[in-house]
Image (cartoon, rainbow, N blue to C red; front, side, top):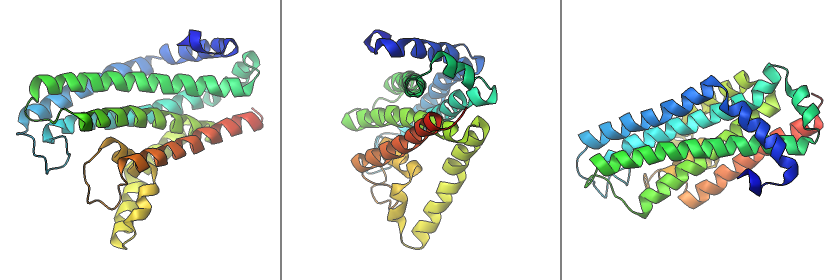
Length: 260
């Protein structure tokens, strides 16, 4: 991958790869997530019955473990992005990093590129483990076709996007802890409350513009068709990409224009 990059960007990318790959917490997280996929996918595949085309999720109840594994990977990607970008401010190493990579555009590009690539690769392994479990224990219980491929592709896209959203937010806030609290608070508490209120007052369609709703719709392709808070998958992908561009672009602009 590095040989395909512009030569001026290679040293910064190498530096970011070393930072991310030498932290024990990152290595532990990368090892734990496939284990989560193994346990969750095996358990749901074994206890579930035959696939029902009219049920949710559309790929069959046996695939619920795969969705749980993807959700864990997405949350981990968001936290990883926030920690990786915000740690420079926590340890006051950003001025040193900027000294060796004076071009701040190149600096942010390397951070976002490595963050997104690691999130993508880790989620790929998680999905591969989950798919192997479903092939071994979920035959006749899971719909293996384009819909499942769309789910897997949506998971890869969502994890990559959330890693960049986390990184952009941490660069804007300059504190990884606050960025992580904001991300988890929004996804686990604030946005679900908005869904409930929006549905209660009859404006559930507004929720389709929120990042959490877009993530679910992008991953759960073809499931929950009667839900007012989930947009069709293609539209959800666009919404999620716009949130990613906004957060990553905001972090880019902050680092580019503000003093360190």
